[in-house]
Image 1 (tube, rainbow, N blue to C red):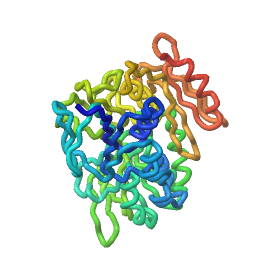
Image 2 (tube, helix red, strand yellow):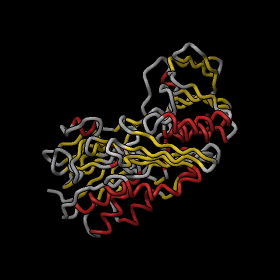
Image 3 (cartoon, helix red, strand yellow):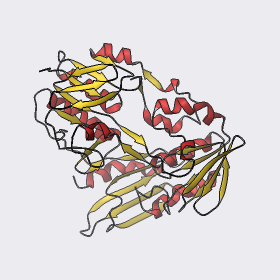
Image 4 (cartoon, rainbow, N blue to C red):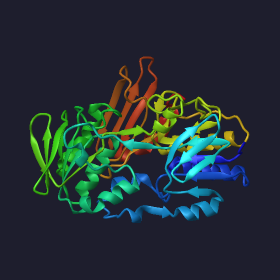
Length: 377
């Protein structure tokens, strides 16, 4: 049987895994297979391309060929994996079949687009390729409708506003960042966006989108209509689990893995945006980095378990940057909030009196690491 390590995917988690594997084993054969170009780019920069007038090509940090040569890996770019035969350790791809000893699924996640008439007219910005396809339209657009007031939506709204565009932000919840923090805390960000001129439509949804005379006509759930030149969907991500599910692996919202990053098949592993760890999806860089280090050890003879500390999440809205950590949406928290000229300090206290979560902003972000140490492991 093959002893090769085959990785499906070329995003941050996959590349970190390759680097950690090579630090531990210079000789093992590593093959990277992905449906895209495999070029490296910094995905978080997609939230700031408009104010900086960046093109998709400008986001590229390293060409795939350079990465492959530096890390001595076999590279199959623009290659789609169509099936996994776990019993025979074989992959079927658009470029033929490949065998593997250990298989790692780092297939990432795709942007969610709600079902409504005209949803095919929505633009998503979940990858360099998606931006490349839409960059001319978006850079030339004067009026942009943005669906989703979460982490990415609020960052994009501020960036589009900084680029001089008229921005309408539509969010189904009654507050921004509703899945991350209480409305009392996110209200400061809402005020910041409103003051800058962003039209924020909360407790609303997009019911229909039509193209009329080169302009888009958006109809909201309350019947109001908005005319725009482009519409971006940023309501969330859906892990790419179809390949794993069709191979018979255990999947729920993501590809289910244990604390060694192993799936329900002992020779198949998963990490990154597609993996479900302890019942959670963690589409952030820090858990991907730590998972890559743990998995590299396990693929090269160790038996390590992933232990994730309390992690800091950053909302990179330049006019009001927020840092948060802990279980910020726990329903039984008592929030102790301090609002001042330097920013926000909001502490979420659980029924036992212990700190369980916090949010800080602006000049108060210096408190983040001290508060982080107080959170339960």
